[in-house]
Length: 176
Image 1: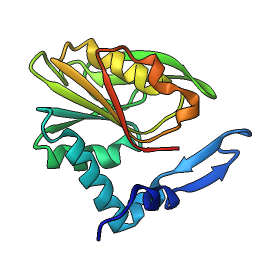
Image 2: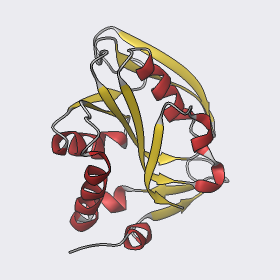
Image 3: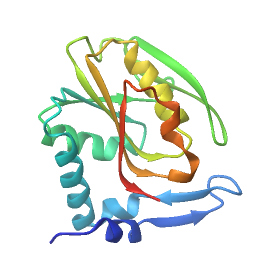
């Protein structure tokens, strides 16, 4: 079954006022629970990155932990988690940032990447870009060869792509 991007968009559940009033939350778990949607997302992302030489897929806690490992397996790459403070057991680097409704910090193991890696950073949604920008800065501290950034959904009106430099290719499967 070949599914259109419009069908994928229609499969996303919208939850108003979550996690705080005024935020419209796009719930991608509805995409993950449908085997056809999950396969289509996997296929689309694989096609986007199959020729980029990706050696590591880095997923951001927590929804980046779903498609990230799937994509890593398909790309014959390793998977690296970026987590909230106190969740990684070995020595870490961290980056703090402001987000739409608060402040947060992300961490990565110091030995997760090296200068030979071509990295694909993945998360579910690009809004203002704060979380991924922090994750990208964190990854760059480990000096990989190249960094790509990917999202399932981009909220175009929030212009999140603008926070990234020209050295980072930012792509999304779906735009809302």
